[in-house]
Length: 597
Image (cartoon, rainbow, N blue to C red; front, side, top):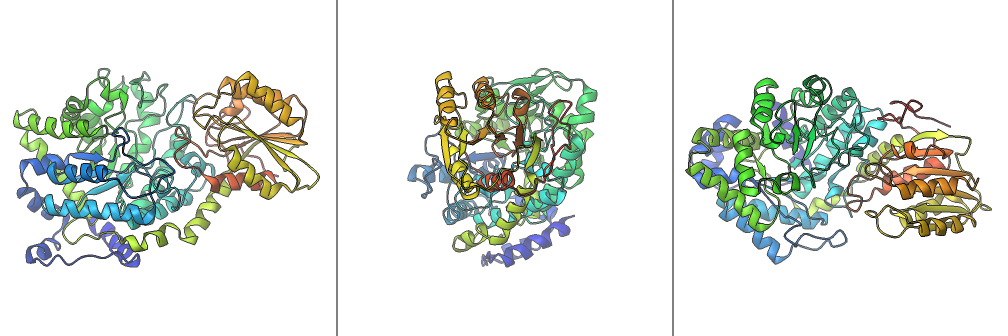
């Protein structure tokens, strides 16, 4: 298994021009020739207790600390941020980091390269896992330059597992070029709850078979090209009513439902060779009614390790999320998670909370609450998998000068555009679409999120005049007031046809539903395009034409997806729709439904 993965990594690194430095040490040269397990054993035997504890903690460039980049700022990290991360890596010996910054390709590569240099100096010569949420590509962290893909539900709408593989492959290539070696994707949750407020279009859909197939393909695309993949959120976050960023959610389905619907995608991912899995901050009553899976020995050791046979790294979801932090706190929760079976604690939160995580784990080890055997078990596993992905003596570091060349690769963009075009789903069409490219017709573009950007795209296609009504409160305020709806109606009176772009991350807000109804009863040719969940149609069944794009998730202000919007507008004006629903929208629109012209 090791050689099967090692060769592609080396070939990719040379192809990308990433250098493998000569460290000038006979011991390092001999260590570099060892297999994964022998190397891990040798390194582990020479580690201090503090260095071992450090491997169990993932530090972060956290937003709570007040020094993360806003979306429109792509400069180098601040001195405060550099000082914090250097402290986490050199003083606390963090074995991994998660990056939340938005940046540019060269800046990100240089920052990650610096982190690796600090780690090699202070962590027994062991490089870092540098990770990020890359669910729809490296653009999730480098939005101005890297390739952006549809959300996972859009990938599933293509019906093509090769699309999932290609996303994994291209994301891996761009990740390595900018210094990332660990991606928190795919989302392996089965979205069976239409009102799920946090998963939604991040999931491949409501059928576990599709989620399983797509997850396997994305994992292969990523790991065969040198980046650790991570199905999440074990044992399933697809049937929750609350967002674990803000609430501790409990699911009450029985053990049979868990085994038949929610676990199969994870088992499929493990069978495909996934080397990591992320836990869910959700109480699964059928396993452990007392604590969330992240803190449950029954879930992590009993179910995941012993029953399902998973041998890779168990990483927690962000421990600063309210589901954990408001109930246990950083230190206590970290100790509980390791005792439950977790290998790496994602220590998000403030600088103080991150330091508390290291200290709490070390004190628990000193006090015997975490045994030496338990500590060594996780550290050995982490080191073994680091070696498997080339993170050992003689590791390859990113070349900042070449990062932009990889993230802006024209072929990557072409593949992303093709996938986007095949994802757009025409759900309903009462002889409304396609719209004509007619210079005599005026088109109203109305919406609550990214309306100006969408109007610009429509202008390129419509032929005639395009006017706009924008709720104007930003994408996180998507509930138009009655006064705003009246303004939209007045604007629509000037138009010959209407394009309304809705956005929701759970149930469609009542204000948007009333807006759609008010525009529909005007009797003008009208199409509704859902930017977020396709479930919007359930709340507005009166609209004559409806299109699903799956293009915005719970955090719409993170990274826009113009590649999807352009594909949707092309379809509105005549390009053949290619997508099929990955979720059902009532009896009339089942999974697999999708119209064509």
